[in-house]
Image (cartoon, rainbow, N blue to C red):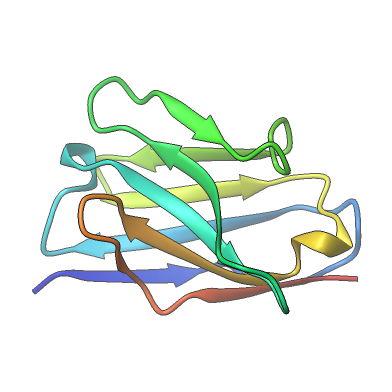
Length: 113
């Protein structure tokens, strides 16, 4: 049974940090391209970060480059998104997803004030 469960969201002041986690079950994150995307109020879905299955190459949206870091703990089968220097415009619902089929979790809310 494939499942992705995000956690780590919350409310933080601008300039602060959060680390989002995405616990995977039913498959191995090390064998899949994985990503984080967000849905901000009034805006279209935006891909935030992606990590490949081979050598861990990563890619980021220009809006978060230099502030966010995507990583995987293969032993724990968890995907992370470290978010630093948060801005009010980072407020939104954050989802982790499997790139191959866009299978996603339920999301975790991030609010920056």
